Length: 630
Image 1 (cartoon, rainbow, N blue to C red):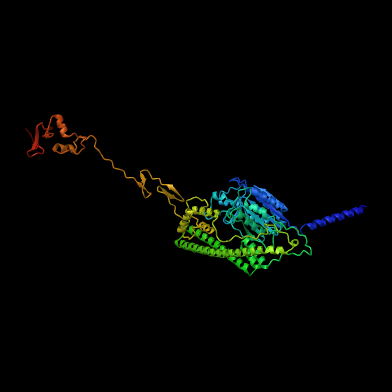
Image 2: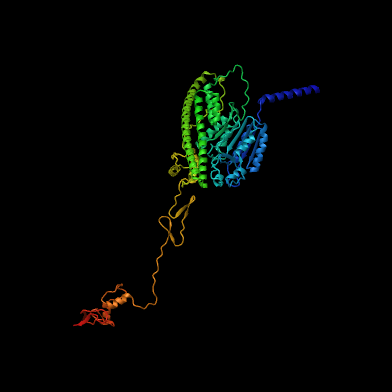
C-alpha cells in the first residue's frame, strides 16, 4: 500500500515536471536590467520627469518578465559606480543586459558623460572626476552574450554646460550627446534625441520617449530594431517632428526581441497556411528599412553582404556614400580645427615669420578641404534623399495596390481558414522620414545663435528664432571669417563651422564714450583737465591765461591823458557810465554844452558863448580855442 502510494506520487511529480518543461520556451534566456533615474540635483535646478520615467521603465521591464530589474534613483557618484559594479556581476551569465538612464548628460570633447545628483562641474575638467562616462556603462554590460542595450533619456538642455568654466579654449562642450560608434558586437545605444540636439521632457508626468518605449519595447516577438523604429515614429508624431530618437550600433541578421514570442501550438495537418510566402523583394525591403532605421555604415554593409545586387542594394550604396561623405566632413572639420589652433598658438607665442606663414597656409588649406568635404556631403545627402523619396513613393503605390487586392482575396477565402489578425502597431509598414533637409529645429538654431554670440557676431537674444537679426549676424560671420554659409537656415554644418573659430571673429563695436576691452565695452574716463572729443579720444583742455593787473598804480590811464590833451574827442566808453558834456554844462549853468580848457583846468562855456578855433593849440597853455560871447 505504501509502495503503491509512493509510486503514484512519483508519477504525479514526473507529469507536473514534464508539463512545466513543455509550457516553457526550449531555451529560456536570462535578462537583467539596471534602471537609473536622477531628478533631485543638488547644485542645479531639479528635474521633474527622470524618476517618473525610470519608474515606468522598471515596471515595464518587470511586467515583461525580466529576471532582474534593479531600480535606483537620485544616486550620487559613489553609489552610481557601486551600482554599475554590482550590475556587471549580474550581466556575466546573462543573454540580454539593459541599462536605462534618465537625467542630465553632457558632451565634452566628443565623449559622453552621465551626471550624478551630487556633481558640481564648476570647470570642464570636473566631468572626469564627478561624472561617469558612457564607456563605463558599456564595460558593465559587456559580458552579456546576445544583446547589450543602453537607453539614454539624457539629451536635455544641460545647465552645467552654460555655467562651467573652460580651462582650455579649444575644449568643446556640446549640447545633447555626441554621436557614438560602438566597437563591440551586438551593442545598441538608443538616444532620446539625435546626437547634437536636445529632447523635451513633455507636458505630462513622463517624457514622450519613455511613453513610446513602454508601448513598443515589451511587444512579444518584436525585433528590438523594429521596436525602436516604432518609438522613433511615435516621438516624431508626438513632438511635431521636433525630436527624433536615434539608435547607434548594429546587430546580426536574426531578429532579437526584447521579450520572446509566446509558444505557438503546432498547426493541424489540414490547416495549411493560406498567406503567401514572402518574396525576395519584400524581404529585401524589410531588411533595408531596418538598416535605414539603424542608420550607420555597419548596418548598410551587412545589408549589402546579404543583398549584393538589385534595387535596394543601389539604395544602400547611396546611403553608404552619404555616410562616407559625412565621415570625411567630420575628419576635415577636425583637421581644420587643429590647424587653426596651431596657427593661433604660433601667433600667440611670437614664432618666426616662416613658421607662422606655414601655419597660416596649412590653416587655409584645411579650411578649403573642409568646405570641399561639406559640399561633397551635401551632394551625397541630396542624392540619397532623392532616391529615398522615390522609394517611398513606389512603396506607397505598392501598398495601395495590395490593399485594393486584399478584399477580393478575402472574399474568395473561407472565413474559417483566415489567419488571426496580427497586432496593429507592430505590423504597420515602417514609415521612414525623408532625408531632405527641412526647417531647422529650435535647439539647432539656439546652438548656432549661442556660437555666433561667442564669436561676437550676434548681439540679440538666443531665442531659437532664426529671424532677420540672426541672418545678419551670420552674414557678418561670413564676411570676417571668409566662409560662404547659407544664411537662410541654421544647420548642423553651420554650427560646426562657427565652432571652429576659437576667438572673436566679428569686431567689437562700441558707442561714443566707450572703448573695446576684450569682449566687452567699457566707459572711457578722461583724466582731470581733459575732455572726450568727437574722435572718442581724451584731449587736454586749454586754459586761458590770466590778465595781470597792477594794484595801487595812481598814474592816470592813457584814456585820461588823451582826454586832457584832446577834450573834443568823445570818450570810447558806454554812455551810461560817463555823463554827457551837455548834461554837465547844464548842471553847471552853461548853455552851449562846450568845454573850455586851458593849462590848468577845464570848465563849461558860459551861457550865450561858444568856442572858436583861432590856430595853435597843444601843450604849453596855448589851447588854440577862444571863447566868444555875443
